[in-house]
Image (cartoon, rainbow, N blue to C red; front, side, top):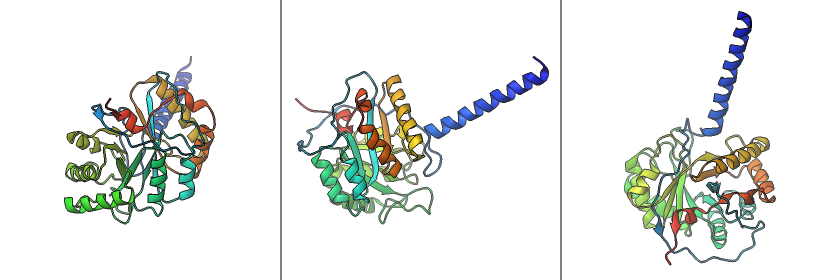
Amino acid sequence: MSHRGWLVTANALASGILLTCMLTWVLYAHRPEGFSGWTSQAPRVPAIHMRHPPVFTVRITHATTVSTSPTAPIVWIMDDIGLDPAAAARILTWPSFIAVAILPYGAHASEIAAAACRQNRDVLIHLPMASVHPDRIPGPRYIRIDSDPAQIAAIVRDAAQHIPCARGLNQHMGSGVSRDVRVLRAVVESALRVGIVFFVDSRTIGHSQLCAVALEYGSPCLNRTVFFDVHPDPGTLRRRLAWITRMARARTEPIVVIAHPYPATLRVLDEYFATTAWRTLNWQRISDLLYTDSP
């Protein structure tokens, strides 16, 4: 091959490597509030004995039988619920292992939470917390970097009053405070006092400390692995589902997916749960993954 030919080949190779790196960056990191370090592994948490609330019989469109195949457990959380009752109604027809994280200030938060709890779904308080971007306001009342413990306790109590059956908590936004151990300790202490028994770190920023702080208090916590709908168009979301399936079959650690009630997300997941493809995977409720019942 001529010298010119070698140069053309080398340039093509370099371009391919650059494109691969860019695609990997898009797939593995979510940046709603700035660059966020992707984490592929949930923390090791102790088995804690807990009595689950009673199961209520409700109408769920899609059956909830899951595969016993040896794939990684998949936990799926729908964030930002409480503002749109029509979107919530669609989500509540999906299998009951789909958890919902409800914004406490949502106009329909209480009624949606009650319906989800009647289905024995895992319900989380989607607690508004400050972003690193001052123009992004997470809600009318939210945890700030300068909030004192009394203010934090009042915000968490108010959230629990709107979503009284919630047993979990994760951050809504939160990149501005999720590295601050002082603030997070006050959040965790307040949450435990109102009956929260597990946490999910949404990891909207790298080196988020919610799980580390929760484990200080002996409370289990999962790290978010994947933000599903960073690019909410149907084609991309279908490819994301296929990618999550491949990942589940290639690993053993839990995969914690967070998605949002975008129109494209609802459409793609409506289609997906109407098929049998999801039954080949090991879907888990958060509480089933983190807790075992006493005999």
